Length: 78
Image: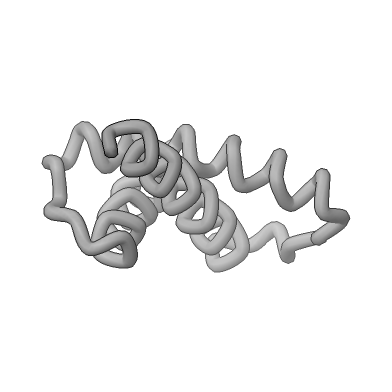
């Protein structure tokens, strides 16, 4: 449980940096990372990509998903 929270926070923070936006705070980064993990898992499943079920694989999946969410959010705002 604590590991998932840490991975979620890191994924949200890294995705914010990739997209060039400021960090929105620990709670928003956590939510972004957790939802990003679900989106990334779904996206990888659709594309047939299988990720190693380690913390690095979970972090990578969450970063990809969170980045996709931030990209979509930026497109909707503009």
